[in-house]
Image (tube, rainbow, N blue to C red; front, side, top):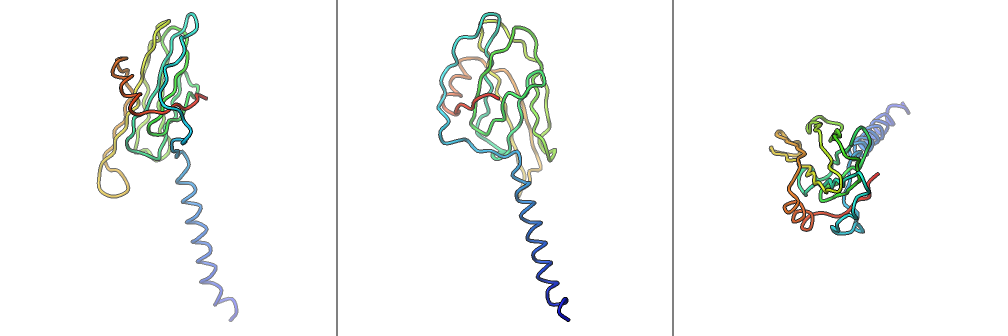
Length: 165
């Protein structure tokens, strides 16, 4: 029978196609640091009535997952490990969301930040993973304001600039 011999070949092609599709989908939300991204440099002074907020993510797991950083529902940036950006915000209280997206291993978080005019603030995004094998069994995430001296030291040692969205 001519169709019987080709059935295993069709199955292999289907499985191969499914494997390639899964591999491509697993890379969604992944990013690495562009080699041309500049080292840390302070932002220019903020506009009148606004303050500058720096967002940075130290190197660490998950290396190939990028959270979306949103302020008041607007995407600011999606930092690969070792990235930072800054943006001006009006004085007042703003909602900061860190959304890790698919998989659920890294929970989304939301905090309120208060921006003060003519001031710089530093928000460190952290994540950690542990467990045996490829899939983490213990994860943690965080976003916290960091004192300026500590943040400047970490930014200089760690991070490269990514343009905000």
